[in-house]
Image: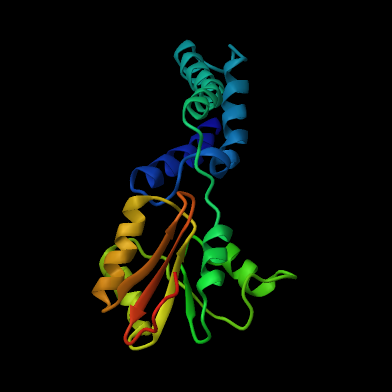
Length: 203
């Protein structure tokens, strides 16, 4: 029955191949028990063949080597910390009554907390719209069409990936909007978009 331990690993790898699940860091912690079972089985020669033991030991070594690889990688290239707070503080500095804040699906939980739930919210009495989980510029466009003729809408992201930002901005254009003001610190971004008549921005 030990082969059942392979199921979570195989399914998670397949999901990662099809870009349905990120196979990295804390998101794969749940695979640790299965890996430990496989390693333990390789330590019992009577229960495991020679080939099986080699396979499990290779997997175990891969698990041990990966953290060292990450340490070396992040020593050379410091990882970007994704944080929605700086973009929201930029929004607060340029916010005007009647503005709407659209939180990208990667920023909706933490962004909603900073805007609505914490003891000292960054903005008060602001309309917050949480974006749908979408992955193409056309899908973003469909989601953003709800803001037609709404004037000023802040689109806030908690990730600095250029391809994701590009998809969002193409979705803005697809839905009839236009970027007016931008903020991007590498770990988050905020775009003031016009969906109709927009008041001038004080820079």
